[in-house]
Amino acid sequence: MFKTTEGATDCEIRSVIRFLNARNVLPSEIHHHICQVYGDNAMSDGMVRKWVRMFNEGRENVHDEAQSGRPSLVNDDLVRKVNERVYDDRHFTISDLSLHFPQISGTLLYDIVSSHLGYRKVCTMGAQDAHRGAQKTACCMCFDISDALSQGTRRHVEPYCDRRQDMGVPYHT
Image (cartoon, rainbow, N blue to C red; front, side):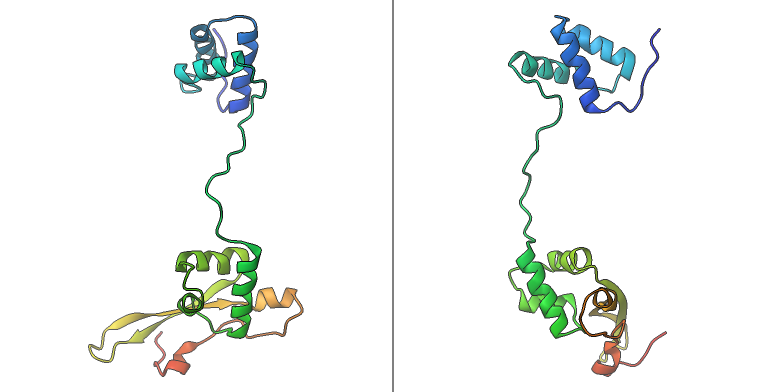
């Protein structure tokens, strides 16, 4: 009996298909050989037939072709504009940025701020609802930009903001 090999890459299996196809082995037999060596879930019979057909039509590459996918909305110019806005007001929130960039979703702005610019959220706060006395989460997400600034040439800013004082909200622990 054959020793089964787990975790084979797709290009490795396609190379086997290409080799056996060049030796004029039928697709069903190729699938049988692949299942014996790589396990039953390595590749379906239909996919083996598809690759045999592509190799017969002249394909030589066993690797996946690059796919374009959905184009990214994030570009260098947008990241630069968001970064400039952050430096204008270091006590920013994603909601504040949304007002200045209405065509960009809040989720995408958050991705730009956290992933592309490397800022991180350091505080959130709760605001007291004056009418009901219930704890209510306000829209404050403060980001630490001191790490990014210390690596650049910009002036140092404090590592977090505290909007509770600015809004007149009492401290909660």
